[in-house]
Length: 269
Image (cartoon, rainbow, N blue to C red; front, side, top):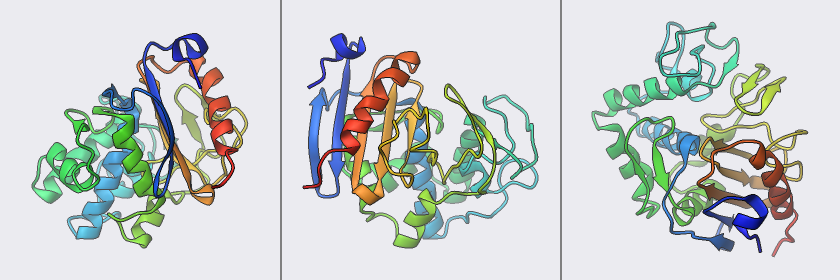
């Protein structure tokens, strides 16, 4: 069992290994509320897919800069720069530019399409059905969710065995969008290509990845600048949630891969 302060030099942390029917193992303060930073994006993206399936909008309707769509915004392919005040810096579909602004524009688009405030819609579409009682979105759809390992474990279980989305839309969520685009993953480096789904990263099992190299290439997920991550490995039917209160940095690139490799190698029960 990890000693967070000794092994990671992290004051507070919690983690869980999730399988479709239950949490297999957990450690730390699983009910502690953490700022999850960019792990917000998969939650918001899932709500967008629910809105698409409900008919409130479509993935390929115009959204964001000229020539871009909802799909471009979800897949970081709209051409927007990283920050909320960044202008469009590339043509839609030409490069993978990880963009907080894209998700903020997406949040406004979802509000207009549904007629419901963003935080209310995401809560009603995702948090409440999954009984994520301690999870809240108050601010940017790019990074403003606060949650617990217990709550995010419920979301991870949903991603392993979807109930809120049909199989067709759940498959689109994790499928690589605009394949072949190159780009830079902030804090990690350049990937050729930089694969992305609809709100989730698809670069797993590559050398130097933050989740190690033992997860399968079909794994999808996200990490956050607050020192947080969530990944789902469908072939293994296993997921991992880890939340800390130490900002992402070199420590995470040293600590996370070995933890993830250990979890990936757990025997099937």
